[in-house]
Image (cartoon, rainbow, N blue to C red; front, side, top):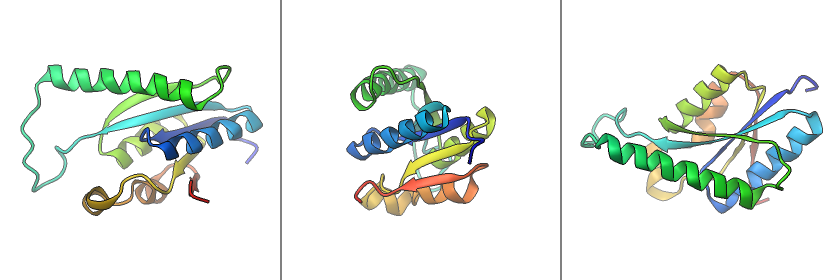
Length: 147
């Protein structure tokens, strides 16, 4: 595990996300690795059976801008000010976007929480962590934020 140079922490801005990203930052400091934090805006276009009208480009751009603003406030809230971190907002299927981003950017470790979606969302979309663990191009450290 000495060759960890890039760590990716996907977040959903929940209270649990702060715990996950703090752990990822701690690992990044320990390994002297780069830390990247991503948030994925779920796209429903890939789900057959869902009728989702095409959103105007202005709405999509505003959603991305709002998520980027939320990302900046999330990082300020959850990480010490001297933490070097790259952040990015992605769109698409959450698990697929995380895995694709990890592959494209040469991530060496993904740190992900075991709890995110709940209730109906979990039934409809399944566990993002489970999908990432099964398809990631690198090791995945899953963290139960309740323990």
